[in-house]
Amino acid sequence: MKVPLVGDTSTAVMEIENTDEFNNVESDILVVGGGMGGVSSALAAAREGNSVCLIEETDWLGGQITSQGVSALDEHQYMEDFGGTRSYYNLRESIRNYYRELASDPDVKEPLNPGTSWVSRLSFEPRIALQIINNMLDPYVKQGLLKIFLRMKTIETVVTDDSVSSLKAIHLDDKKITQFRFKYVLDATELGDLLPLTGTEYIIGAESIQQTCEPHAQPKEAKEHCVQSCTYTFAMEHRTEEIAILDRPEGYSNYKDKQPYSLRIHVEAGEIYGEESGWLDYHLFDQTPNTKGPLWLYRRLVDSNQFKGQYKNDITMFNWPGTDYRDMPLVDQTPQNLAKALQEAKTVSLGFAYWLQTESMDASGKKGNTNIMLRPDVMGSEDGLSKYPYIRECRRIAAMTTIKEHDVSINHQPGPRARLFQDSVGIGWYPIDIHQAGEGEIGTSTRTKPFQIPMGALIPVQTKNLIAANKNIGTTHITNGCYRLHPIEWNIGESAGLLASYACKSKILPRDIHSIESLLREFQSTLIKNGVPIHWLIDVPVDHPDFDVVQKFVTEAGPGNPSNGLKFDPESKINDFDLGFWDHVLPQNRSGTKRKTESITRIEFARQICENNQ
Image 1 (tube, rainbow, N blue to C red):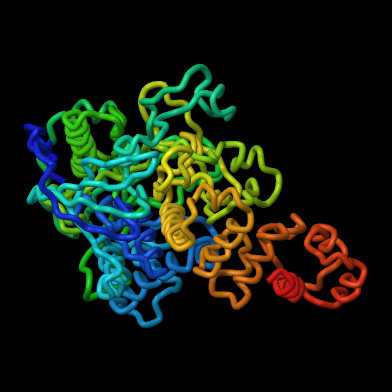
Image 2 (tube, rainbow, N blue to C red):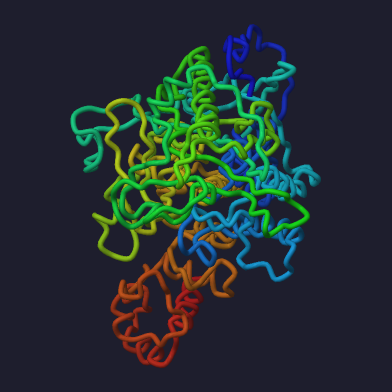
């Protein structure tokens, strides 16, 4: 937040001379990082009655949807009915309720999308998401279960016998140090900052085919510098009158050609842009052939026509290949180099904003858009850019389970779902979407099947009481490209918070919970009870009265007939074909059970099995 747009970047580097004076704070669970994963972790752990501390280095909780400015949710086609946790749906619905009260038409189109953006089913202003997140956490703060520390960054840890016993963090404004003691610590930082500080083994960049056997991995050798690009997002308002043009940023000519600044992009089939591979040419305000709409509507946050009297003009957020910073990865840099990289990343984004105002062409050939203006207040910053860059990839733990391309890719998974993980702690779905990184990046953009989040991906092979709670889980460079999105990060964090809570209460390490089947099943039941789906069953959503029964049944018996696709089809009659798939869960007297089940529905059968297994 202190990195200047121009000039000496050392002003954003803090020298720490003495860590011997500090305040002590104790809790059951410490969550480091207040992004999507960190917020959902803290919420889940506090909801279970644990004492929780949450520390965040910016002054806004929420990460992707607030301080990083990506408040147009990257989701999938089923999200309105299925695919997120119950608390994630509460977040979405609370945001919608805020805007419903502002809507000028009482019969506003539902499900309400405040920005009517074409890339997202829900887009909104970051400050509204911040308000909702604070409201969600506030009851636990008032109960004394949750303490929140903003503008705090970890500087030191104590590790004994592969367990983290304490952690020190410094307040970035007043420089006061706090020592935290805890039973479990969750790394929900945006860059996986706790991993090197705790000696936890981790991976960065792109692996080789020899390492992962992935078809799109590096063909010869791993490349640590190939970390997905980051982006400083920004918001602009479309006015009817002309406005003042931004000053030309330093280094503009370099990035104008290098990025390049353009509305022409290459897309892969199955991505969010369309079904065919090739080049697409966009205009800012006019729809062009084979596109879903103009760039202005791509990630529009506020469609002013829906809120007459509340918003005079539209507001759009820009997160585009032209704003991606690719020169230097943000992980494993010296503080001085990191500050330099962040300044360059800011220059890239402001340069794109300046290019939009002065050089981008419209459909008629007119150059520039002198009626769009930067809105710093939307991002809560002085320079108009997001408080924190949008992070797509970070350090990744060496995990008990590493998710690989062939586990999720449509090219390797013939059924309706991706690989079945018996230790599932959540679900997600998004294409593998690799934003260009450093030189030598080959990456891929390809479709996936609806996938699961294996519990083993949250657990390091080494550190006993650290749990990954963000994009730092056990993925590869390739699969990080589909596990990094909003609802998945929220699910990862929520499951991590519930795992830490279960470990605290049972006094059993996460790795042992994972390896003992009875404990794993009991923990999965806890997830389900909390509204976390661990299997893809799109016709039994989290608010369905039999959600718990169906999720538990499929956990024991499997999804059954693949011809049902992603559905459970609860009200259809069970048949011999179904029984053939679920034979292993039937009582020993199969013939008697078969006679009893000839006239019952699939959901009635699931209830019977769950009752017998209790």
